Image (tube, rainbow, N blue to C red; front, top):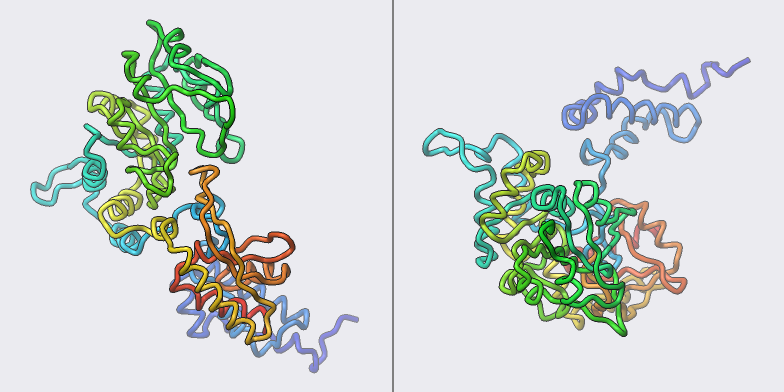
Length: 435
């Protein structure tokens, strides 16, 4: 016989409609949606039937487990030491960009002139901000990522033509996507020149002919080739009398002394690149976007290609990009230029406080990296709080999740990628693991 006597706690489990009438859950349903709240209620009822929670506490349990938003994405604290972590969403937006996104989330004048009441150029504010940031560009355009920018270049300038590029720049980016395959899918023919380690200007010159659409110069942003090497620079390539498209990838608009080998848009345009493509969500520190900067005639041709409509960005991206370019330095810039001595001081302070709570914590020197396929080989001196390895999983399961890295049998929380204002969040997260 199944249980069901008057003493059976399952009889005390409230009905779903009774639980949903709880004012806290009524408010949650308005904010998150009834379906999501009902799912949480059903899960809590199942746990009560299994004897895992008290039937009288079901509503409290549901309130405690409901997410902050109706999205499954969780805000995460990046303590990995990777400044632009692709798996964690790359560049975190600045406060100014977040405010701009919120302001643009409703009805906006994204493609409307309030003065005349007529249609206006879409995203004109973001485009003006990008043009102001890189005066060397005669014109600019924005698509949804850097791969899309390259795709548009190939479709517009080299369909049924040849793209000349070095064999040493046939790169693969994240998740197995290969740039040569992307380009070939547009109908362009790839004319590979040189070798993996050495490609000279003579190799390019010998390959250029009537069927050449453009020369592509790709920065190998996620690997280094060292030793017996040679490559032609943009200045040499620009003298070949065909358009040079330079893919810098990382989104660096101006030279940075910390990244002397990282190409930037300003320098390459001055060197003669006809077009420069870049990402918006890496070293620029903005939203995911593909930036196209260069000659006015080429940018206009790209902008008018039918595929450009399929690659365009939404109003939220435009708002965040403009605020990133116009506003204060985004978090990526702050972490890149953080003072290593200050980071060490913070790590020592946190380790001392955690030791006082009984945690096996020490401050150690660390090495941070740019990440996101940018500045390969560049090591940024940093400091971390070193914890026992089991803390890595515990911290990921917390609220908010804190993601570190496990190295040499220890969980390291690298503070270069943690804003100083979030040190208390790290402290509290580790303390909760102890409790």
